[in-house]
Each structure stands twice: as C-alpha cells, then as structure tokens.
Amino acid sequence: MVRFSIGCVIHIIWSHRYKQYDKAKQKMTGSTAVKTVYCVQEVEAMDWMTCLQQAITYMEQHLLDELHPENIAEAVHVSPFYLQRGFQILTGCSLMEYVRNRRLYLAAMEAVDSNIKIIDLAYKYGYQTPESFTKAFYRFHGYTPNQMREHAERVAPFLPMHIRITIQGGYNMDYMVERLKSFQVIGVKRQFQYDRGYQDIPMFWKELMEQHCKNGHTLSVIKNFGQYGICMENEQKKDSFTYMIAGSYFGGDIPDGMEVVTIPELTWAKFTSIGPLPVSLQTVNTKIFSEWLPGNQEYEIAENMNLECYTLHKDTTAADYRSEVWIPVKKKAGAKL
Figure 1 (tube, rainbow, N blue to C red):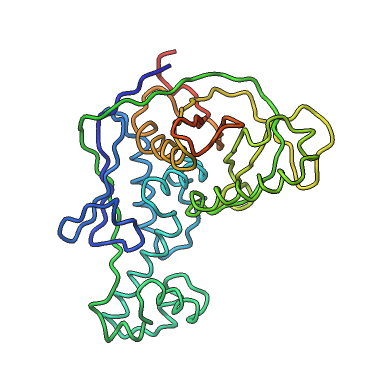
Figure 2 (cartoon, rainbow, N blue to C red):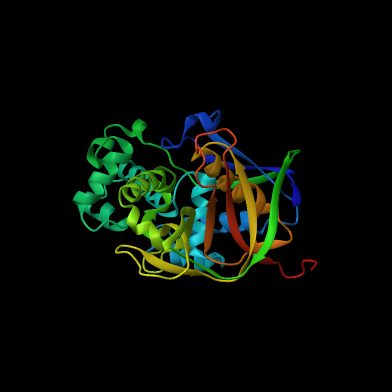
C-alpha cells in the first residue's frame, strides 16, 4: 500500500458566475466564483493541470472554428477519453458545454453591442439555423437575441476559466499498485454523455440488476455478475463514453444483448472506497482526477478505460460498504523503477 500526501489546492476560477454549477460548492468573491479542489502536488509535477489549462486556451483561441473533443485532445496531446472525464470532474461541465456556453455569451455581447443580423450571429457561432440558435440562446439567457437588445443587463456571464495552483497542507490518500494478467468479462454496454454519467449510470445499474434478478437463467454463464463497472472509450463517438456492467466470463453461450470483453494485462492503481453507493465511489473518482493524477510523479494513465470493482451480496447503502476504482497506469519516463 502506498501513502500519498496532499500538498496543494487547485482553484478553478470563473469571472462572474456560472449559473449551472452547484452554488453550494462555490465561494463567491465579488464577481468571481472560485471552486476549490484539494489535490496532491509538487511544484514541478503539474502536467495534468497544465494540460487542462492548455485545453481551455485552445478552445478560447478556436471558439469560432469547428471544435470536437478529438481535435481539442490532439492539441494538448492527451486522449479524448481522459481529457473529457477529467475536465468534467474538475469543472462540472463537459468540453462541448464549455464551448457552447462561451459562444452563447459572446453572441449575446455582440447582439447587444452591434446591429448584426440574428441569422449572421447564428452562423458565426456554429448554429445551422437561426431557429436552433434562438432556442439555445433563450435556454441560456432567458431572452431571445432580439429581446436581449432591450435587456443588456440580463446577459448571463460566462467568461473564460483559469486554473491556478497554490501550495497548501492536506491529507493522505491510499492506493495499491498491482499488475494483473488479462481476463474476460461479460455484460451489457451502454453509451453515456460525459456530463450525465454521475446521474445516469446509477439508473442503469438499477434497471439492469432488476432485469437480471427476474431473468436468472442469464446468470448461468456469468460468474459474479455486477462485480465490475467498466468505463471505456467510445471509439465511434468521442463525445460520449461506453459503460459496461459485467461479471467474470469463463466460456459458454453468450445471452442476447450481452458482450464479452477482454481486459488486457495491465498495471492497475487500485483506490479503495468505503461508504454507501453511489456517492462514496463517485467521490473517490473525483479525487483521483483532482488529487492523485495532478501531482503523481511516478505513474501516468496507460489505457483509455477504468474499472469499478464491487463487493457482491452486501448492503450497498451501508456505511462500511467496500468498493474500488482501478486506473491502468505505467511508469512515467524518468521515474524510479
């Protein structure tokens, strides 16, 4: 078991306000919202946070261009899967939500400050029709573009994010690193949006476990069904990810609607979660991206997946319920072996 000391604070700063964030998690100082996330950090080990700030800078420089998670990730040399997961966890919004809201804010400012036609605003800020632009504009600002010209004080601000790191004391995080041989799992896959995972995946679990409790025959080829929850890159659609509820597979007929996946031989960083689901596990997931990954000088992410491992036949609402998050890792270049 490795003990991991925390030594800094990340401040993700929004000028003015972002109305979609949980205000209970923000500190308001004048016109600036500051969300504070505690993380592990040595001053020189800032690769992950630098990557996120570079992603923000790239989006800001290309707001009027065609943007996708793939070209943003390519620009900062990281996989779309982990860039989107990390950005969503740390900021509370997805990459494309950030782009969309920044465009809608700039469009509002331009509508107020000029006589530009609505159709030209729509095309400039990436919308196919004036109707779709007006609908999105109204959802964000509460006014149509034409109405906004009469209510300039009602523009919903959404200014660029900035990440600032300062040194501060903290606490410890425990994890274990272990290399495992490849193994097979069998289960059911579903696609999720990055900004909806924490809300929708628990419902997927509830639906699937109720279904398979009623259809017990499908469990005959599955050992420990529900032991694993697996997040994987969606290779066809980079703005979403694949989540699989699974158990160990040792051969036999594959039930309709299920798939077999081979988990390759990898080195895993295993993080323990103690507490009721889903909150305890989601908290550990958040800490991995906000605390462990930013400051870890020894390991980096190796594959575009991570596993959740559950204790079966136990009360998942109990205060002592145990689960784990597994992250595939490899030694950083120059790290001690």
